[in-house]
Image (cartoon, rainbow, N blue to C red; front, side, top):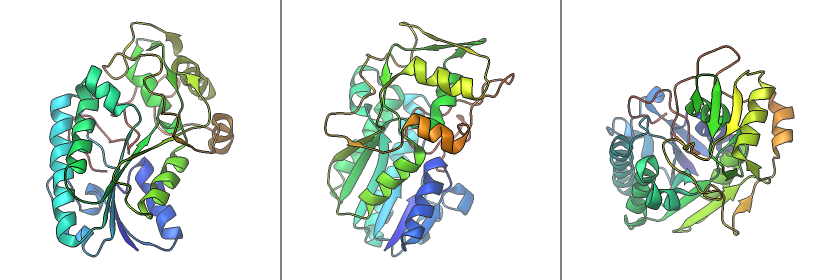
Length: 283
């Protein structure tokens, strides 16, 4: 099966491309790094030619609602339009557990993701939307976004994160199956308090920042209820536990190291992390 992966050079995209190729599929890794821009349409017709499935794991470089909506609307509309012309039979988009709830109550970036999902649902094309919880590799970026001086202030919330490899496996398995024309959720096997798991991730990196739970803290500009980032009861549970991931990787990807300034803040999603927050990204 020929499959085009949009955002194929990002954190999830690289894992996804490798997994699909190992399973014997013909895979096109499409991103600005490979000459394909889903936002402008550059190289898109060639990338999708002959593809049976399109997997969109790209992300916006903007955190604000207006900028993120502009990216997701333009990129997704292009993918649906070019995909229909190419005869694509399954459009899959990776999104975030809690998007619908946060879009209603907080707007912002999550409203942009919800608008993307609505565009896909209303397209009339066969689709699946995968909602994944946050992944372990993103924990340092959560800390960076919540850092004031040397203190990380995090919302009083529960999370159920998963490994990026498990996200890629879930997306690959779903994309090569029949379109569900709906949403399917995936999550890690353990629940943590947000403050607890971020502290553990920073301690493992010997990062000196203090991590505290703050009832007034916001999550990428949004207020969180305690269970707002948790999956529903019908979510598929991924196998990798946090301690197993720590033992296998040694340290998370990205984020600030001890004594360094926080890195550029990435968008709060389970998709491939962009390289900056100042411009649209399809990496």
